Image (cartoon, rainbow, N blue to C red; front, top):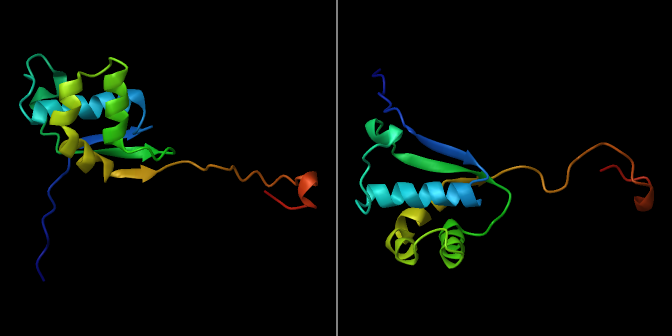
Length: 116
């Protein structure tokens, strides 16, 4: 029997992965990976970040969120086009997070004694 060697993964996992901050992080990371911006002075410059993803309750795709940020002046318009494929890769790593309707165990009188 041979032991399998696993390669450690280093990356960023964000809660609220389709939010404004996370979208900016993903677009910035993609820009660095694509060589569109130098990594000079970045703390993360020495680490081999290979993975990004996270959890979110909204389902608007990350590339679309980046386009919205470009319209709002947060990201450069040409950047969202340049890193669209990389953002789509990150999008595939985003998982649903949180409950949309909390289960409290309380009885809702308006629902004939149903428990939520």
